[in-house]
Image (cartoon, rainbow over the protein chains, first blue to last red):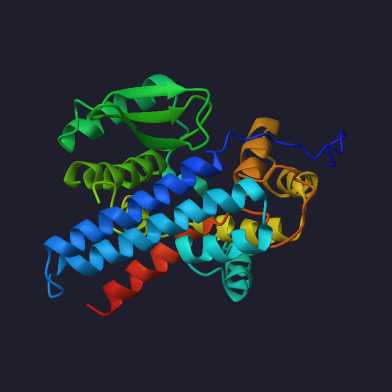
Length: 187
Length: 109
């Protein structure tokens, strides 16, 4: 089915000013210099900081490229930040998902009602020692489920209000999000 | 550093998918990460409307679902008529990358 309106939307974004991005760049250089002065070159932490500084610089440059809508630079910087994009992997991925063995979704269990979902999420979180994690059903979530940080140091499990889950599917999503939560906690 | 070391997100997503996979029956293959990777490639060669049409045809998503997915692929791009490799977000490629990396580690013991 074709959409009736052939409308390619135009989005407006609020980007940091050039001055702000320059300030961040100077600050990053300064932080690294300070760190280098206080740690010997043999320190195991030095390469970690070096990598992190480079990553933050790439992120800073990405913001500039987004502001300028410089597409060739955007591709190069995104590949630096998120890893190389491999066209051969697209073909491989396409073959796997367009021609999969027909998957019987019934093996995942029945589609759950909101009430059932709430009860199962609460039980799962309790079993994994996360019973204090607030759960928020929200219509404005782009992901089916995600963990979001709330200042100063809290987290919330967001579930898209319209998302449909089957039993195993729900547990898989919860297992996925708890990995992120553990990393937040470790940090 | 509190937000993670450089490049942590790829490994973290790989670990998260691997953990999620353990909750699924063995007979059920997780295809979402492959679909996401494919769609990034598709979005490099198509504009917003074309991506939306494809999603409607293939995925039979709701209009809201179509918009969210198309927007995610074109996130950060002002004029979504642009059809060049850089006019697309590579965010959705990290899942398959991370998964492959974790599988490789596991295979190597």
